[in-house]
Length: 214
Image: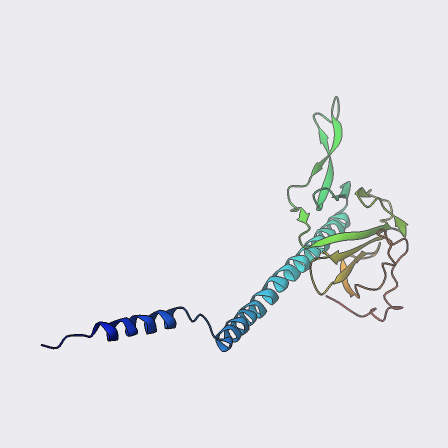
C-alpha cells in the first residue's frame, strides 16, 4: 500500500498557497485596464449622442410649435401667443378664449391650447430671445400675435448644456412673412460674446452660415 510522505504533502501545500497568493501579473493588470478603456470608449459616446439627440429634438419641437402658430395665424380669427418660462424650460402655445356668455358677463382669458403640445427643453437651454431685434426677458416672456396686426419677427438662440461635449448651438427664426420656422446651426463659440441675452441679432451670413440648415 502506497503512503504519501508527510514531507511531500507539506511541500505541495506550500506550493499551492504560493500560487494562490501570487496576485495578478503586470500583463494581466494592463489587459484589464485596456478592456475597461475599451468599454468606457464604447459607452461614453452613446451617452453623449443621446444627450445631443435630446437637445436636437427639443429645438425641433420649439420650431414645430412656432410653425403651428404661423399656420394658425394664416387662418385668422385667433388671438395667440407663445409663452416661455425658464423655471421649467417650457414653451406653450396660448390662446385667448372667452369664458362665459360673450354677450353678457363673459370675459377673455389666456389658456394653453390643447391642440398643440408644449415643447420642453432637454439637454439644451434658451440662450437669448429677440422680438423685432429687441431683447426679451431671459426668464419669462410672452410673444403675442393679434389678428390684423403685423407679426413681430422672433429669433431664438439655443445651446447645449455645459456638460455636453462638444457644444452645439442653434438659431430658430420666424419672420413676419414666414409660414414655417427655420433652424440654422451655429458655431457654439460664435454669436454669444459672453452676454447671456445676446444683445444683438446674429448675422448668419457674417458667420458663413447663411445657407446652413438643420
